[in-house]
Image (cartoon, rainbow, N blue to C red):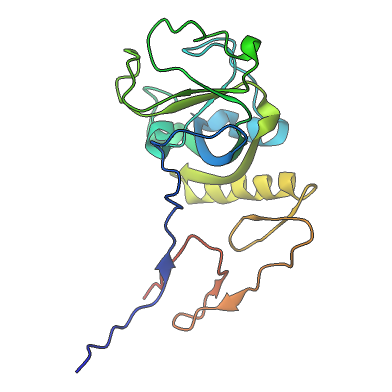
Length: 211
């Protein structure tokens, strides 16, 4: 006799066709993350990212496909003062930088590249964690799509609303799953969970019924 399985809710898995450890392809658009101080969050959402003046890979916006790496920033800051943005990044033309004193370590953009990529477990001595890192020259290639991490739930909701309002001039945003709805596509069908009755969107990454 077959065993009956009872469940409610789901959690979507990230597409593993390109993991955080795989090499990005030039011209691709990828999910990435950026950690910053909570005090800077609203300005970044409203005005976009600004290039850092310098860094391991020179000027640009530093991001990573590894969310755990993004959670570390700002370094030596209490977690309650941190926020991590979920991004969509159009990487353009990518240059791999995988060793100390690489000839294009800080001149990749001047040589026609839009993004520099440090692979995981590279030979760059300053990256102790072994996690991959990216530097994007043009901030306009980066779109904030969600607030991935924020300790305070109320602050997270507030920042998400600001992300939605910022995106509304470009695309409609689903109020339930917080994802942008591309032009020409129908709005997401909002239903009620068959167990708890809460409104859910099929594009939500996660829904768990609470007792």
